Length: 352
Image (cartoon, rainbow, N blue to C red; front, side, top):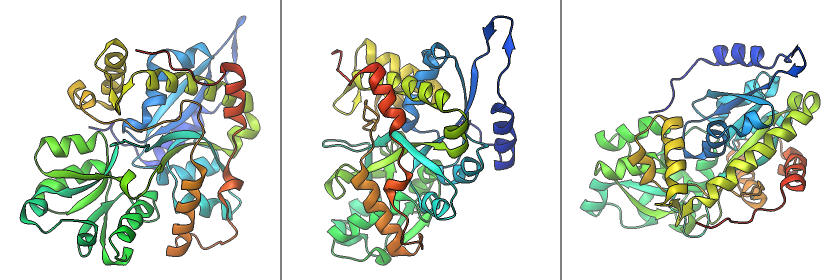
């Protein structure tokens, strides 16, 4: 289960309180509070590991992890600066905010796919596989496929599947809902399929309700799924804090990558340690994490810019982003990753 949801107003109120500059106590400076939006899936690995292993504390940070239903719902508080850091997929709302001069910056990788990755798959209801209704991409025509929300990057991913099947995106019926309800929707037949991620995919397969028919790598290689966002206010007013935050984040990503084996967490001490952290952070049984495929996250923090450009072109073609002048490059700020890499050096696997 995901962490309990809180209302947007409550999140904003909490975030405002969290962004108050900490004072001094005697000779010791209080930790710098940072409000961080999370979405409650495996892509939160970097944040969860950094928190569990005390890396935030090591850099004098007090990261407050605030759950959201999805990255799109972070855009408003990120735009006002009430939320300082966000983690989630790119969406039309990100680029529409930029068109209104609301500066939210992409500062690091958060999740994606890679050759051999099974983290994100095209999942189809098992009954449709068994009956022969679904045999290949062309059979997506007329099916009810779940996506997180209108104007989200999974729509661009589904569009690539439609193109491979020689059908139009409009030939597919899209149903919008968060990932957790999709698990139940596979069981009761409310949806026929989904662009599904872990750990939800493993739960659906274990229940016998759905089949991972193919990795999205088959039709959308190196798909950039999620990024880390900074608010403009955070960048302008607290840049040194942001630099320490990304340095901490990259430390956690290196632990994460050292624990991977074949797209899953390794069956050794390093892997089991991350399993325990992820299970606690996501409020899931360790067995669910242990058996799930994990996202590809660049340990040096750089996102796949070509994938982001493809998604933006799709949003514009769909009319979800109407300002044709908006460009991905204007939303990028790799200075925080550059600073972290200058301190840490490039990633070198430590081995298992």
